[in-house]
Length: 359
Image (cartoon, rainbow, N blue to C red; front, side):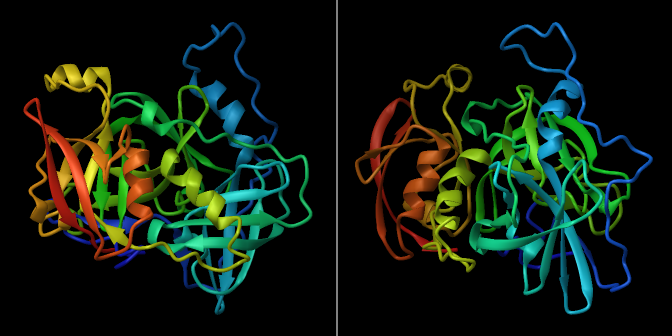
């Protein structure tokens, strides 16, 4: 399913590629409900013994910790069936997924990793602009959960595991491995995205991207594909960073089943949290801030003169120390607001004035 606008994800963003949402949509009302197959053991995996405290876990250990909290989500709407993935974040049944997985009115059901019977779920709130939704499994208690980690602490090259209902295949979740390929990607309305080469396919939407400590550092949301079929854009998937998700979840809990309306303000930069490694590689004179990786042509940041490798250290006098600070402050603004941006460029601090655009 090619989506022209999952939060307005744009086609032809990179070398003629197409960004596609990775939900497993189907227009066939006879498509069977996907549940874990009896041929696959649904017993939670036992972690390997002898792992050193604080050491990165094996893939088997990561799955033992996270996979029981991964669920299959199905939406029956208008005679059709669509499916995706979610991850349980509270023992009483709160589930994070993508907004596009549950887009439209219909009956939502959730199947747990170790169950074959789907459970009813309700929509607590959705945020289309950030492609996030919060569900609540009805009459749930003592469920396995996964924890949202610190995505700012993740480094390019770190190993990751993606878990999800890829292609709605019968037999339980699909598990793929890879690395963090890049951070701070901006695609359409979505910014601060993690890029990974772990295989992500339709149906993976809403599933967790997990680090070597078994922490969910992102929610898989989109892939870049080559519509010509010539083999381009392989291994380019994107996940919404955990530190972007955390404050939005709090807003979704108050939505009473409806959408939340974010400001839609748009600066037009993709950033990555400044780390000692990045500071050394770029010979930077500061140790805190958000390094600009991309500038959207024609955006407020572009018109203000923001350049790649500028380090954003403050917005309107408020310190910026991470990608999460960039997202949080921009979300608090409205389109048309003026924003003072303090940057460090070639060792010198300067201020720029930007007008925020519309998402």
